[in-house]
Amino acid sequence: MTKDLLGRHRAVLPDWLALYYEEPLEITHGEGRHVWDAEGNRYLDFFGGILTTMTAHALPEVTKAVSEQAGRIIHSSTLYLNRPMVELAERIAQLSGIPDARVFFTTSGTEANDTALLLATTYRRSNTILAMRNSYHGRSFSAVGITGNRGWSPTSLSPLQTLYVHGGVRTRGPYAHLSDDDFIAACVDDLRDILGHTRPPAALIAEPIQGVGGFTSGPDGLYAAFREVLAEQGILWIADEVQTGWGRTGDHFWGWQAHGQSGPPDILTFAKGIGNGMSIGGVVARADIMNCLDSNSISTFGGTQITMAAGLANLSYLLEHDLQGNARRVGGLLLERLRAVATQVPHVREVRGRGLMLGVEITRPGTDEADPAAASAVLEAAREGGLLIGKGGGHNTTSLRIAPPLSLTVAEAEEGAAILDSALRSI
Image (cartoon, rainbow, N blue to C red; front, top):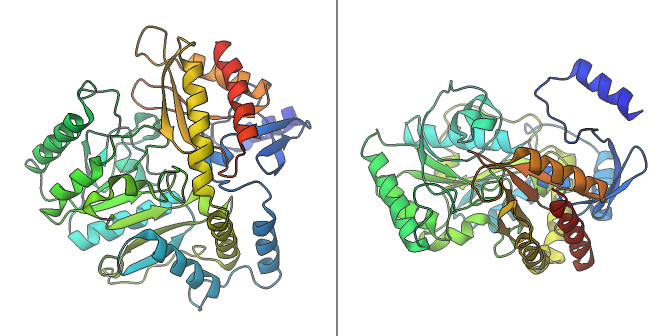
C-alpha cells in the first residue's frame, strides 16, 4: 500500500517536494508524543510535523474545540465580526510584549513574513531589507528573496534589495574564534559598514534561532546590539518567531527576549506551533506600523473560526500546563544527554540549542565539512529504532533537528536520547 501511494505521489506532485527516508512512510495517526505509520509501526516523534505539533498529537482540548466549532461554523471571512479571532488576537497582543499591538492572522509563516515585509517597506518607503546569512523565511517570491540559505533559494529574482549581515551562526565564519562580546562587536561593526554603503533599509528580519539553517544562533544580546544601531536611522526590527515562539526555547516565551535589552521588536511574525497542526500564521506590530497600508488587504483563510478555536484551546493548554517550563527542564536534560553522546561520536561537531529546539551538527570526522550521507544514515537508523527527527543546515553544514512536542516527558526524552545514541554510533 505504501509503495502504491509513493508511486501516485511521484506521478502527480512536484519533484522538488522532498520526502524523508529511502522508503518514505505514511503517518496515519498520533497520540501524545507518538505517531503510527500505515504499516502499524509506532514512533516517538521528535520533529512534530516540522515544529507544528507544539503541545501533543490528538490533544483532547484542541480536538474538542475544533469539533465543536466545526459543528457551528467553519468559516465566514474577515468581512464579518469573528469572536474567536478577536479573542486570540487579544491574547497574542498581550503576550507579544509589543506596545499598542495589532494582530493580523494569516495561514502560514511564509504569508506572515510576506505581510511583515509589506508593512515594513510601506512604512519606511524603502525596498531594502537586511537579513541574516543562513536564514530561512518561507517559500513565497518575497520570502525566498530574503532567505540567506542557498538550499532553499530556487531563484535570485526578487522585488527587494537584500543585504546579508553576519551573526546567525556562532561557531562558523570569520568571527567564530572571538569571545561572545567580541563576536557581537564585530557583527555590529559589520552592520554599521553595510549601512554606510546603501540607502536606508526598511528593516532587519531575523530568526532568534535559525530553524532550517540547523538551529544555529548568535550570542544572547546580539539583536539588542543591532537594534541600537538600527534605531539611529529608524530601521525596523522584524523578529521571525515562526519556529522559536510560544515557549519552545524554554528560557523565554519568545526568542527575541534573549535579545530584549533594547526593547521588543517592531514587528513579530508567528505560525507553526500555535495551531498544533491547524494552519495559523500571523503578524504582530505597533498600531502605527500595522495601520500604514492605504488600501484594502485581507487573508481569506487567516483568522477563520475553526483555526482560531484550535489556537485558543492550544494556547490555553500551553499556558495552564507551563509547557515553556517543561521545555526548559526536559530540554536541558536532553541537551546534556546528547552532549555526552557527542563526546564519543567523531561525526558530531556540535550539539546546540535551547529548550526543545536542539541541533546536532554532523561533519566528516576531524574536519568542519558537512557530511549529508552520514546525517541521512542517522535519520534512517533513528527511524529503525522508532524515532522521527529532522534535518537542516546551510553553507557546508548538515544538522539533525530535534524539536518534540513541548509536553515531552522525562522518560520519553531518555528513550529518544538512547535511540539517538545508538543511531549516531552506527554511522
